[in-house]
Image (cartoon, rainbow, N blue to C red; front, side, top):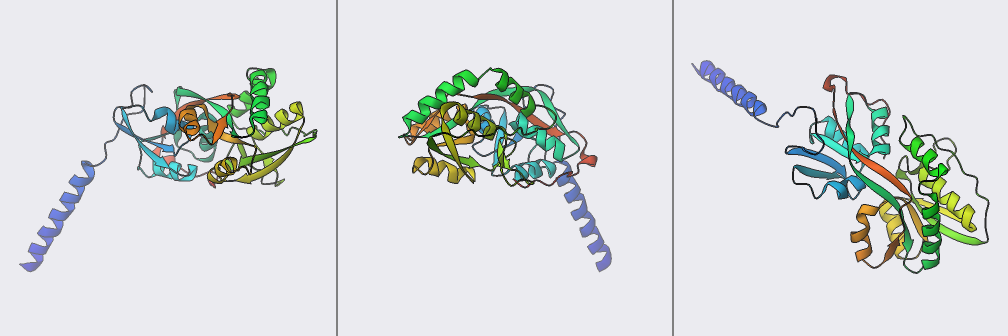
Length: 276
């Protein structure tokens, strides 16, 4: 009798667990309209462009993560329904993990800017002049196409040197915008190309210092760096300049925000480890 009663209790628990599982997280159909996320949970990188661009929408719930790796794993294990990020970063994710789908068209467009120490108005003026000429130029179009192609290929710009020393902060955890090349050990990325072009054109010699975004940002505020480049966004201008501690330059590169969702849950495999 006791065994029969115990068996009934266990059966009841199993049924409840099954019912709980079936009535848990909602399963959504693939996205067919980027303007309507219909209550989905969207993962973004904290304070990156997608965070700013999507924070005002009321048809989704944003969940913020500190690293790209955490963001992707959240999608993989069902903590979020979709993730949103800059297209160049999304392309890299698609190259690193199978079973995913990039949703077209883009849901928003933002622009990259440089961050300049509040006392270096001379550097700000020079970079603004450079940005105005670079934006839309042949060099810009060529770099933009590489950033948004199948896989980013870094083209090193040789520094020509100059009399003026420019202390530059480079976040090295922002592939493909800026990172450390695993073979050469040198700074690389689209923003390294941009800042080198700027230095060559305006007579600066670069002193590049790498670090994570938060330390680079503080280095600009306390005067350790004259300028920083790498994932500073036009969409963050109001919040950033309200502090009165830094300047943001004119935009020098546009980028799109796209969604990534799971296309084949049975074929989700990490092809290349995420380390940022």
